[in-house]
Length: 443
Image (cartoon, rainbow, N blue to C red; front, side):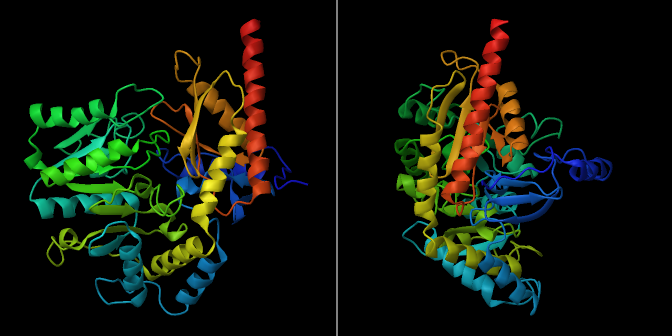
C-alpha cells in the first residue's frame, strides 16, 4: 500500500465548502495553488479535511526543507511558549536571538568577521540588505537580473524582473534599479563573457559603477524557472563587485538551508557574498528571515536605523536553531543531493514536451515546450499536468516567466518510497497527457 490515499476527488466536498468561504472572505489577489483545506501535515505528507493523504513536492515553496511539523522544532516551540512569546528584541534581549546570530555568522560563507540582523520575511530581509548596502557605500543604484524574484514589497518588486502577476498595475517602481541578463543555457546561447559584457555596457552607457550600491543575485533562480548559472558567471559578478566597491548580495531565501546540497547555494561556485539574505526554510514555517554579512558593512547603519517589532521573535529563533541542528544531525545536505539525483533519473525518459530537467540538489525544474526544436513554451500543458498531479495526490507548483516550468522543492526528509511514489505519478501523468495530445493532433 502506498502513501497516497484518496477518499474523495481533489478537492473534496469539505474543501470545496472552505474554498467558497475563502472566495467570500479573502482578497482575490492572494492566490492558492491547490484548493484543499489542510487538516494535518507531517514530514512530506499532507492530509486534507476530506481525509485525503497527499505527497508534498512543493514544500511550502521551499520553506519546509526540514519537513512539515518537525518534532524537534515543535517541541522547542512548545517549551518557548511556556516562558514568553515576543518581548521584542529592540526592547529587551533574549538569548535565542543572539545564539542564532552567532550560528549564522559561523555558517554563512566568507573569511571575514560577520554580523546578523533578523526580520520576518525574505522580502523584508532583501529590503534591509539594500538599506545597509546604500548606507555603507553612500550610493543608491541597485542591479538585479532578468527573471529574478526578490519579493513583493515596492523595493523588492522593483528588483524582481517579472511584470505580469507581480508588477503590472501597481504604479511607479523604485528608481535606480537596473536589470541585466542572467545565464539560461537552455534558451540563451550567449557566452559568459558576453553576459558579463552586458554589465560593462551598462557601466559605459547608462550608469557609472560609482553610483551602484549593490548587485543582488539568486545563486539559482527559483521563481524564474530553476535556472542554474555557471561558476564563471558567478565568479565574474563577484570580481566586478570587488573591482568597483559594490556590495555583493546573495539572495539565498529559496536556495539556502541545504536545498541545493550545500548549506548555501553560492558554495557550489566557491564564492562568498558581502551580504547573504535568508528566509523561507530558516524557521520551518515560522516567520523568520535574516541578513548576515561583513561586520563592517552590517554596522554601517547607526543605532535605530534598522528596526522591527516582530522580526526575530523567540519562536522564530528557537525554530531556526533547531532547523540548523536538524540539517547538520540528519545529513540533509547529502540527502538533498540524493533526492535531486533520484528525481533527474526518474524524469529522464523520451518525451515530446519535456525540453529540460535541470537544477541543483533537490531544487528541480521541468521545462515543458510545444516543440523540442523551437522550444516554444507550453504553459497550457503545464496547467494540465499540475491539475492531474493534484487529482492523483501529488502537490506540485509552477515557475518561469511564462508558466511553463514545474518546480519541485520536496521536504528534504522525504523518504525514498514517498519520493518514488510521487515521481511515478508525475511520470504517468506526463505520459498520459502526451498520449492524449498525440491523439488530438491525429484527429
